[in-house]
Image (cartoon, rainbow, N blue to C red):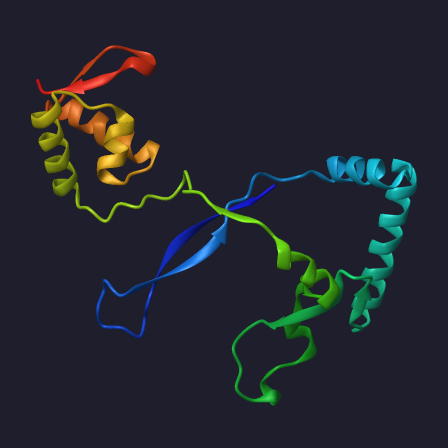
Amino acid sequence: MSAYYDLYQTPNPSSENRDDVRLHARILPRGTISADKFRELVAKATGFSPAILDGTLQAVTDELHSWLSEGWTVEVGELGYFSVSLKCDRPVTDKKEIRSPSVHFQNVNLRLGSKFRSRFDTMELERKASPYVSRSSMSEEERKEKLLRHLDKYGCITRTDYESVTGLVKHRAMTDLNRYLEEGVIRKYGSGKTVVYLKP
């Protein structure tokens, strides 16, 4: 099964041109697999009972915490190397300005092992537009002009048509259309999935 990704704009801070943007890829998560579900999946794959898996995982977690707390880097199977990062209460430029009570735990870092990382070399990827990110760079006035031109040409427009015309995602498109209804720019005909928008 493929993993979905989408491309997002990254402004170039070193460029004076505001339109000079680069694209970077980001995974679109399918969801979150809970701890209980993951345990169930591993139990089915290995034949180990959930109780044994729970006990083993708890033992690994406890040992990992114990050694990390003493400043060790811990390798856990093919997964990789765990280590601890720290933070200071405030920015300092001189070592004499900071004391131990002002240094605290920040995070646990994972550096993937080469074997585990190489498993992803054959990962299948498929591009899919994110349902949460608007791709429209149009101003509100430009979107309204697009809407009116579409109505002049076709007589009516649906919410999905408006999304295609403007590049907005669903909730942003609905916000626009509801505002145009309140302003009297358009009127609504039909109900539910058969709603279309017309000129007044």
